[in-house]
Length: 70
Image (cartoon, rainbow, N blue to C red; front, side, top):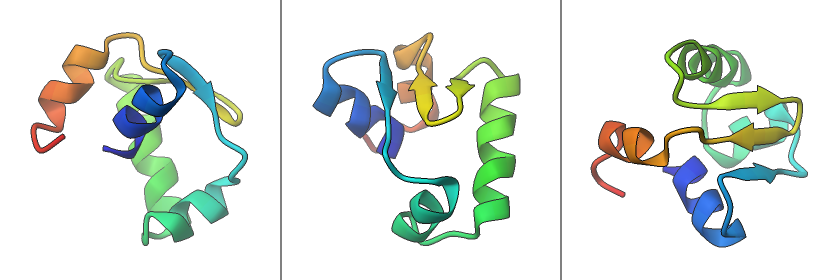
């Protein structure tokens, strides 16, 4: 959901965050290693593309389908 919210806030499918993975994990109230694993899994599935502090959502509708509560 956070990725989709950031996309809406930025108005683009590619956006950056000033937060480190540790800060993002704390913000999302999860373990940093679990966050990294999940982001890697999402990248392998083609839901996201990661470039250090940048995210790209190549198919936002597919991500939205994976997160129906958004």
